[in-house]
Image (cartoon, rainbow, N blue to C red; front, side, top):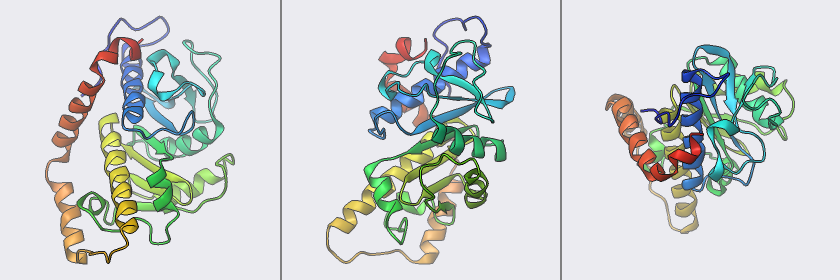
Length: 257
């Protein structure tokens, strides 16, 4: 499901792009709703339908809780602003480096989410990475990538290494940094980051308990991951996205403008 267009697209913006802007603005607000923000840092991006060389990113400095469709900035893969709605839009360089790498290399991944939550950063700093402690974590068995920390992502040369480490996956732990999840739609990317974040939260709490941990067998881990892949995730993703949008329904007149 996509966030409905609340009004006619403004001049200089197609209906398809306006729809994408409304949907991405809704995603920003849902990330805030679930407390996955880090002040003005971290980024969510969405490829513009019919314009493979451009994607939308937040105007740097706007709180996620207040993000509107018109606050988003259209940029190209070189980081150049090409946006008649927001020609002076300011973007975060690290956001451009990380997201442009994935959008350019993985055209099927329309939406990319990067977070700095306490649980995500904590697991990113643990040598074992994500442990198969919960059903949420086992969703990512054999489907989770890792990227070594290289400092603040300001060097465009890091893009090649980011893409190589991500490989065919849709989720990645950025070591000593945070989490990254992507999807072929906003809904899928949201579900990927939601499950990954919850898995990290559960791991931090389980380790804090100070008791011996129980790990399912390798066979069970593989079986669980296969179940997630085979149970009609597309329908479930859509149902979950529709439910999430209802949580911010009263905000739609504001975020879709």
